[in-house]
Image (cartoon, rainbow, N blue to C red; front, side, top):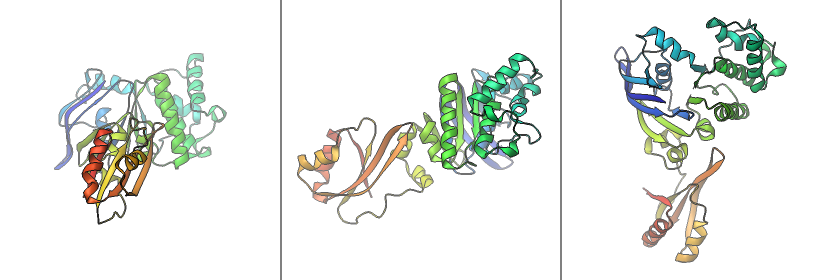
Length: 321
């Protein structure tokens, strides 16, 4: 388990983290999202000890992350693999040698039968067995990131930290990389922390997510809860509005989750015998589950009947001003 309690970090007079408190469970895929400058990458670097923090505490499995205890920090970092946006591969080394690099750094021999078997199995896991001795210049962006993932796994980490790991990739390759990370999480039970500004990333693989703005956590929960029924700041971040809505009548937004399987709209129209317009809607895919929201416009005199019906059917809703 990773626990952050009231973590504060500043650069000179600039406060970057302003009392961050988060708990990340073992084996979880956890997302940290927000605009550039929100403090996401700084927070990640504090978790793995690359950055110090002024106050609060960060513990990994009960061990304090602190630059003051170099020996303890070094062993903590061995249990944390890191995946970067720009891959960070060495051009003079081939795929096998890039994956083996952390082992060399820790003084582990890479030419033994056991080491070769391990390295080659990881390269096979990420789907690059045919690229064993290819140089990074011979690989596509997605293949380079697969090498980086294999390298992050070579020391058998308990935690993988992803810092905008798919930002440099096109959408189809991003989906492939995210599926690979999901596979690694499921098969190996590795905790994965994903820092990103890409909504598709958290929707596809994250089980929980924190939304950061100006160094503070404004919202935390399941991705579907944050994005289907967002707070104002998340709406601004998504740059998403419900379109041009009617100025007459009452606009009501309905939120549908996995518990909302009944055809509420058609049932409501028949039961209440009223007319209304469907003004806007969207569907979102969260870890293979489809959620959505819908905006309807009803006559003012019908508003209470509609809202009472939605309450009866346990549908989340709000009146849009």
